[in-house]
Image (tube, rainbow, N blue to C red; front, side, top):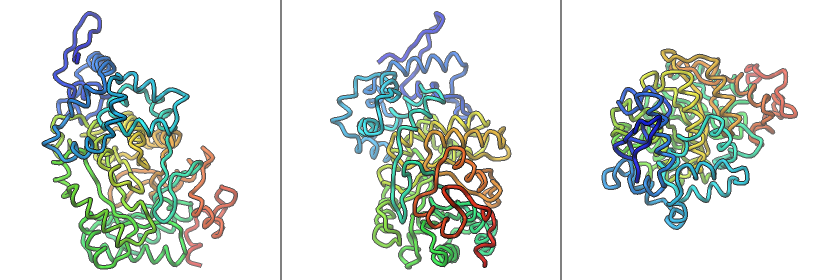
Length: 454
């Protein structure tokens, strides 16, 4: 295994595969903060050159976190199809990139080889890709899942209706929910982030949004994004739960910080399957984002993009209905600028899809980042071109509870029209019945939330 490369007669040496992966990453403020990033553009190019010539077996034999020290590493490796891996093990990372980008290679071939790849191999190949490469490769893959309705059908683009409220006021939540519905947002899920995380508040908010869903016969799924333990309590008490949500990270120690473990997720998945109210079979909803491990000081010397790929290795084990990436949510200590967040969004969408996951992207940012609405809209359009299954729908694009900027209900409608995409079929029929949509286009009733009060 060669961990050196030469540029303009200067030899660059790297300490380990983990070091090569970190220094080959596109510039991210979190990697700089953690002291993992390349110090110069030349060193970054040298690391990419070194990485391109590594064989997949070099990455397999040198996990960034040892098998015996981390349960996520064990999960990823235990799920690798060794027969497929042995056919690929002598490929270089550059050869893997060429295969993925071959115009004759489609989804079935990519999903087959992905069974023989570790998450770190998928991260490695993404580090060698340009932004257009990432869009092109991600576009090849469209993953379908089913909870109450089907997500990810060809020609569709779905949205999470996210009616958050800074005090969990039910009237405020319902008002925002109705506005989103009037713009055609909500076919992925109606999902509320609660301010208070306890069983009493969970039940109050969940029953309120389920009441709206049932009253208007909305074909979708509902979720209150409390901690997984709160949702497990709700399932035990008979509260209606379609999807069980949890944020996850790429190291065991970071998940300890989130208050979760694989055994807990196993139990939650089993409870959702047996006690949940959806038809399934996909009953889990995960959220991830580059930099969470660095923000918790739980990165163990691994760069944030590689750790994000490990999140996907964890998530795919549970065959989730949806996975939402929020790499711009933490702030400038992990993703500093609009350019960084757009790059992260495209990396994450590709890496998640290569894991076979039903990926959605929140091309979001916080107001203390060097990013703005233009960056967000560019990221949204690129990820839509790359085949994101869904985006968020937030009133005015400003989440008044979580205090960050995301795609608005108006953005949702615009992206569908720009790319000639439609809602999930069941949801589109419902929109047509309500007079909100006709022939795939919104009608003049769109945006009028009062239609649900008449």
